[in-house]
Length: 319
Image (cartoon, rainbow, N blue to C red; front, side, top):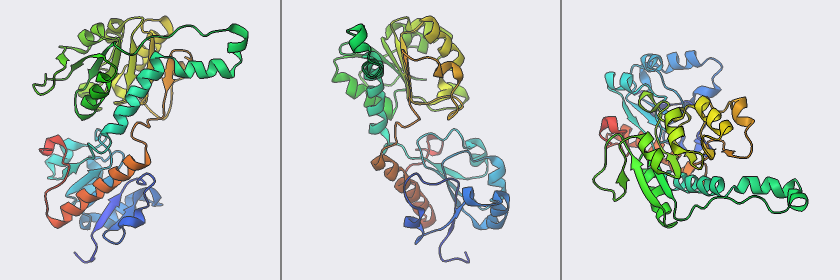
């Protein structure tokens, strides 16, 4: 390698962490700042062996960097990376699990409370003067002691379950396969889980296997008092079916941190006021967690260049 410091392609800014903090170890090349991104990729060519990414990374990009050996994803989800193409080319992929687990679980439970107790509606009720003109706002539903179904009993799902135990909630889950190491009850399908639950929390990765896993049948099973919370991926939920379910009262309410096609929001969702809470995909967006995500991303890059074991390879690589 001609340079003392190895070249690393960075596809997007690393949240609030200045890349200069890592410049003493790596030659960092910012793809988003390049006037001609294609020319940057061609110039780096086989000399670039690692990329730190926050968005899509395609097979074509890999082909333009034939020396690439690592794609370090700054995030737990890696559905925007062509993993099959990476495996075919012998490229390792890492992500940043664990460091964001607790913050995402916190927001999931916060959304459950906000939706169940209509906290956002209550704020609007006071600010609009309706407390004075109309008196007491209509009653809300209870969270304590209710049934919560978790679709996706991974690290984050288990962290949500621990929090729900403090609310004396009954907890069940659905996974692709049942787990033998958790005490919660397993339900054989999302529809079965929804029919059982008062609150349905989605904590799934994106991709074809989870696309629209929560569809009209699942929403109908959740029922007119049921509440949907999604902190997974927007593609997990059929948004057209969700809009219809909220408008028609098929379910009671929803709270979404993620949207299909975000940051664009369908007009049908924006038009729903009283029984829908929207968030800007910010479950892991604390200063502490975002810094930990960036540090783990570059710790994987460092390990790669040192020839050490990667800290957090994706499951397809044995993580």
